Figure 1: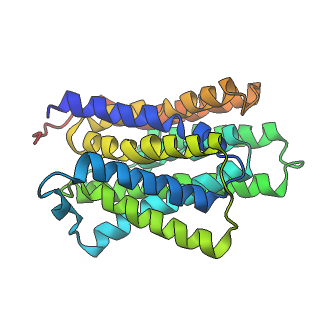
Figure 2: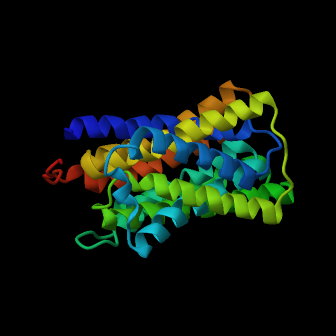
Amino acid sequence: MSSSAATLLGFGAAALWSLLALLTVATGPVPPFQVLATTFAIGALSGLLTWTWRPGAARALRQPLRVWLIGTGGLFGYHALYFAALKLAPPAEAGLINYLWPLLIVLFSAALPGERLRPAHLLGCLLGFCGVAVLVAGRGALQARPQDIAGYACAFAAAFVWAGYSVLSRREAAVPTDAVTGFCFATALLGLLCHLAFETTVSPSAGQWLALVAGGAGPVGAAFFLWDIGMKRGDIRLLGVGSYGIPVASTLVLVAAGYAEPSWSLALACVLTVAGALAAALPSLRRPPPTTKCV
């Protein structure tokens, strides 16, 4: 597969993720761990049918414990926090806070060998956090409901989990994409156990089942496989810049679907978040891309 084809597949993952907030909110009263267990079970089944059925592909599941901890811990931790954030707080605001992860990936990557933190990284961090401040102020921080604050905290923590997972995953580039199926199965199992321990099961309506199936097949299924290919074989910096458009697309989708009200604070926060991420990525974009051999 060529690098350009792999990069295009990676952009497909970003497009699917722009729909995740909408599909999550559309599940209505279905509790977060039930959503997580259901969507990841569907995503794992999709991966099994479309990827891991090939002869010999199941060998990809034989990975060291650290790989399983990174893969399962990242997927489970991030989505548990993200789904909880969308259930507790206004979805557009929680989504934008969560989508600080592209900026955090740039910052965390600066600590890797051969990288260093530059003034543009700090500027990007400042702009991104200004976006969060605008969101909280726009909602009226003093009048915010306790569950809103809890939701914002979950979204903020989710951004750190996904950024950490993404950076750690770069150290395991040799792990084949088929292993993602196993990570999804493990995440679904953890979600089921947490659901049975902490939540009351809600019977989804037909529309909510449609949102669960669509979420499991796309943003919580195919997107992980596409992103894995893009990260390992495509133009990583181009994909990183492209991911900065996810919060904009996600917010516009929520507004268009009627799940969020357009406002100046929401628009300004969106601009600041994307501007901060782009500023942080600027030093990397100025350097010539490394030559990589596609397999």
